[in-house]
Image 1 (cartoon, rainbow, N blue to C red):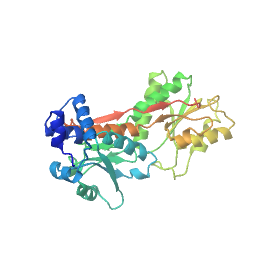
Image 2: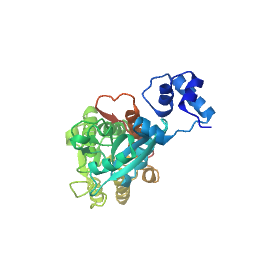
Image 3: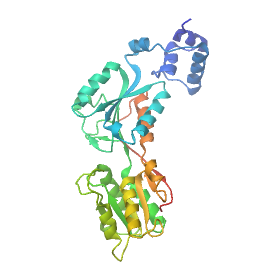
Image 4: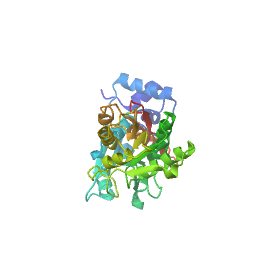
Length: 334
């Protein structure tokens, strides 16, 4: 026998609208106890959602669509999608992604996506940047993940880059390091913000942030891991002067890996002679270096979870830019 919402409502002593809200994320307001009781009754009766009927009734399927701006090529894609999926599954929703690249525009991706009638749509980027959405789609996209809408028309979740650099630099200062060099990633928004936090921490610590040593990791205006690296020459130069750095902050874990090799060529030990710290927490790199690397973990999973909360909220909150904090991962390089 097919179990209906009416059957569950009768057993629970509530309205069909309340049952629908408890099981399908509708707009009905109820206590957590009521929601839990309805779900227990539904499970006891063996209720199975008729997705086709539900879609016709509500006008949407239990899906969150993600416009993936090169996201699938990022080593951090699983963090964002995993966090979003975890939040979605808590409301009996599923996540699907469509890649934005090449000739596929936001308009064409959204047109294709809407064939599946998702309840909500997110836009997620491979790295922190500003994205200018066509004005007609600003209302369609519910949240930007790991990027910021250029005109601030959409709620955006971005890593707190300046805050992460401030925290890491303070960590180095508290460890007794006083001459900190920074090998940064040129041309990236994240790097610009991190440099601000780096210099701010030095100023607050009684050092001259304006005179700090900040060097580009590659010889291009915009960082790419395929560009010619300048790391070895920078480290060689830094270690050849009387005022050697006692710490090197790196723009990412790949740069830190190069710094390790360059320091060893100079006969310096980590962390006794020079501490090394970084950003990203690419575990396959950071945990396998010798010694393991102290780094700031990007908040991709947290951004995904927060995005699900925003997209599935009953009421749409005012548009804002939310900075999500990194997590300091202490290992043995400091």
